[in-house]
Amino acid sequence: MDASQYKDYVLVLLFIKYVSDKYAGVSYAPITIPEGASFKDMVALKGKSDIGDQINKKIIAPLASANKLSDMPDFNDLGKLGSGQEIVERLTNLIAIFENKALDFSKNRAEGDDILGDAYEYLMRHFATESGKSKGQFYTPAEVSRIMAQIIGIGAADTSNATTVYDPTCGSGSLLLKVGDEAHAKVTLYGQEKDAATSGLARMNMILHDNPTALIKQGNTLANPLFTSDDCQLKTFDYVVANPPFSDKSWSTGIDPLNDPHRRFHDFGTPPDKQGDYAYLLHIVRSLKSTGKGACILPHGVLFRGNAEADIRKNLIRKGYIKGIIGLPANLFYGTGIPACIIVIDKENAHTRKGIFMIDAGSGYIKDGNKNRLRDMDIHRIVDVFNKRLEIAKYSRMVGVEEIEKNEFNLNIPRYIDSQQAEDIQDIEGHLKGGIPGADVDALQPYWDVCPQLRQTLFKANRLGYLIWPFPSKPSRPPSTSTRSSSASSTA
Image (cartoon, rainbow, N blue to C red; front, side):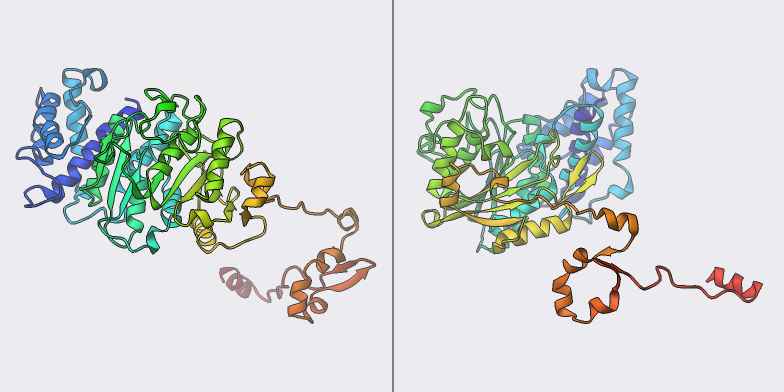
């Protein structure tokens, strides 16, 4: 079975094992385990000729019904699992794997570890490289989620259960969970996901992380937003985060943008038919309260593309809603290698905003197989610089709106931050004749100012314009005086 298919069975079994260990027989548990629908009851079905049908009827259906889970995998799918003795042995062996004592969750909690998300990411990594299929849009890399959670300001805010966080394209829910973890108090999470199977994973992920009251709904956010108020207007939230599909070419399917009942495109403009990036961004803007804050991952094209997108970008800038832009390295996300950016939206005091804070973090990463990964040091630098508004040459700066207007509202980061590193100057005579060019030593003048005698101590004149390092490159070693001492020295 292809990894894009077996992940559904593995993750559902992981979920059933976890909640059974934690909550079976527990009164007032955040999730209901119906009588006869626990993992132990599933174990009792091993070896039975109708094991797949029994799992569907006795385990999956009651659990899904009691906990509002949808689109669960079919454990009696003969096309995927085989028929006759083959499906019996396959499911029996799979259940046996989860009986491993190392997977006893009765005394453990997910807490800060995204168990389901980590398993999901692991499977993403494997089937994206092995089967060539792309499902990576349903999972935001944990490092990027951490950055978004820390730059929208929820960690410094006075939060409570009344604080709301929304992800209109929540995938498996990992981004929502990271934002919720950053808050000092338990906040209320909302998410909508188009893919039915993935929305089920998100619901399970919420339960695993002690967020059973999180509302996860399944449906197309742009065509049919499911979080609305009593007067059918979009519900607004304190914080909104999203990693929508890049350049969604079918974003307008099922919707008339010019007559959108939620007026998402009325004030800023209508996105192009085949480029849905701004459709999601404008949905976020409309879904924020008057003091709301948000962050959205989008391809770099939204920063400089022209025509209708240029008009939307200009209107957003003039409104003061764009607080910052963070350029990320290429090849971070599953399913695409293109570089992306985080656009930070802040409605609070937007009318007083005089500039946009930009960071070019495109070169801070480590290679990890065929993907790039942000290191802890990269994450810390991005978050620290953004939250403190630190201006660092070739990395970050506050760009005034007037300068942006002169550039016709083009937000392409290289226009404002020159991150190119100067090439090393090669001294041909130094290579051929030896010696250290005096110009290289002069370039270290700030160090010589601090330690005035250090330069004279380290370097000696060689010939005009060149210096030498007078110290031996390796410490000399005293000759051994005997076989014993030589042997002892070697041992040492």
